[in-house]
Image 1: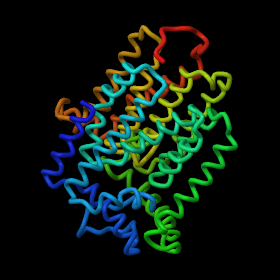
Image 2: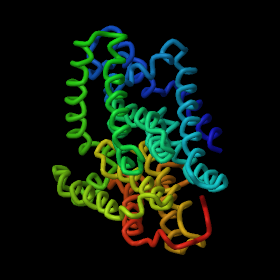
Image 3: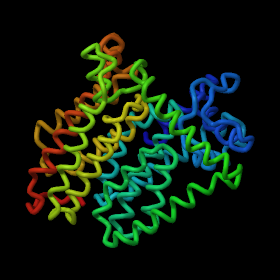
Length: 371
């Protein structure tokens, strides 16, 4: 299911000649070579505008030499494989890892259908966690830098900083990898152009943030949901974002639990969900990041699970994962879930519950082992 659903999703798009996202990726590299602004519209090649960092051009470069359809399929399936390996590297029992794959499979298909980069971002965040926890700060810093220099989301890998046994070494590796990531695109272009690219990237993200509130395909976040329910599109982000950040940070007061694997996995789930539901750039395919967090949360629960846990999972599966699909009543999706960004609602409720668990669970208590 993990690989099959994604393969047929991207194949369907290739056969329908509907791989616009791939063309955005492809021309990022071509524009880097030609020193053409990476963040201007090129309707002759693709719709929309690129919003990825200059480093992304280097990542997509090998695929640009292949036929477009084949490249889109390979890009998607390699991304799916990397996330698969990331989930199977989690410090949790093998059968629980498979359940995480199963719970996330439909949301992965949605991301694959859109030929999305968010599949890799989810993998980078999880791998940042895994390598920090394993004491391999070199690779952990690499994945934090990769995610940050391509889509900014990856910076949340720093949420696991306190799990590092040698924080000074991790910081040095992070600085080193950041220098590499900054310089690498210059090999294909010029230092002056790449520096200008970062300035243009900032402007692009700022403009996108303002435009998201006006699109029902974007801003599928807590802020977007509140704006649409209240019919107040100009509602600012900060009154919602600041309490969200403070709640997220509140879980760090349990510093005596930093070494507990169940606390660590809960914080990973919280980070994956928080990254999406408090981002105005979130769209439906972005939720592969959040749903990986939902699945990790569920498989990290004390056994037997309570009825409230099952309800929260089913609520998320129905409204967040299945609502955009043909398996869900389209009248409800078109008239309620999509216009009001209710796709974010189950993840918000579940994230608040995770914060409650992080603040109150007795991590010393023995329960049925799942790691």
